[in-house]
Amino acid sequence: MKKKLIIAGITALLVIAFATAYYAFSRHHSIEFLSGTDLSDPDLLRDTAAILYFSTTANQDTDRDGLSFAVFVDQDGNSKLWKMEGLELGTVFATKDSFFLADRSHVYLADSNGTKTFTMLPEEHTGELTDFNEKDNLFYSIYNSGFTDEGGYASNIRYGNEHGFDTIQIPHYLQMSGKADGKLLMVIGDDDHISLQKMPLQQNVQLEEIVSLGPIGERVGLASILKEGDYYYLIMADTEKLTSEVYRIHEKTKEIVTFPLTTYKDINEYIIRLPYNLRNAATIHDGMLYYADGIGDVHALTPETGEIHIAFSLQGASQGQMKMSEQTYFRDGKLYFFRYHESSDTHSIDTYDVTTGNLLSELPIKGLDDMYYYAQTKHKRLSPYDFIVR
Image (tube, rainbow, N blue to C red; front, top):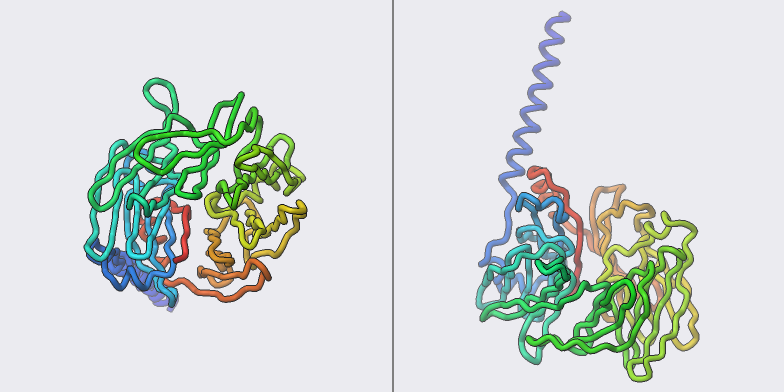
């Protein structure tokens, strides 16, 4: 009797093992990725409500086997996957009738006329930001590229449209960046002197200094550079003083006013409060500056008075150093929060009104399991790096 029970137990375990293997095998082979034809389908162009970008980190791409995914989400929360090579801190961009995507060595441009793939050299490993200049009908995608053979540093810009892409070079490391009025905004320089500069998004590089910011010290940027009217806004932390401030800079008078934002009790709190995505951490709406930190507190600054307070907090945000796939995106007075629900092992896009802090809606996202599973089969780990809402 005991022997029969043992045999029955072994048989049951084998059945479970084979069932699990069959499920995993079937699931692996049922994963579908968008084709070039799918990417330019008018229905996808019309129905995509949000795009998420995930990639392996640069150190997972040393054997040129990194992965990245653009995830297209419709208004019902259904997602479709476009698979690419890896690009840490990569970006996605969409106009009304086209998608711009990029990886280590390619640019992909999709519209109703089809999808075009452009092979790009040099290869890139760290993304920065992307914009579209309607005036000259060109996309501009900026990268912190690395050291040159001459010992300097270069930030490359891939620019072009459906007719082709080329690369130009800024001979500087971008400490911070942003975009406004058809111009690239940047903080560049060395340890002894950094400055806020602007450059028209065009084929010839013409840098113009706006104002000197002195020695960089231990300052680091926490958000994209913003501009409203005659004022530029920079959010910077000082990791030695364990503080962060908002810099308000007048374009014409060069006057710099700083507003204290946060005092961190220690370096761990500073790390925990680092934003989910520096590109999408802040906005200006109705004269107020809003900044979302890494534990979901949304800070509001009234520039005229210098008053700063926590306007509201994002529900379900991670409270530790390990972020759980969160991303934020500001648009038209709303804050969109892509987050992970640990209790149900699901993801959603939550929408907040920045003025009231009210949670307006919650959109569950379906289909991300396939992406994570595929990466796991390749022994890779994905991180979210960009998020836009159309």
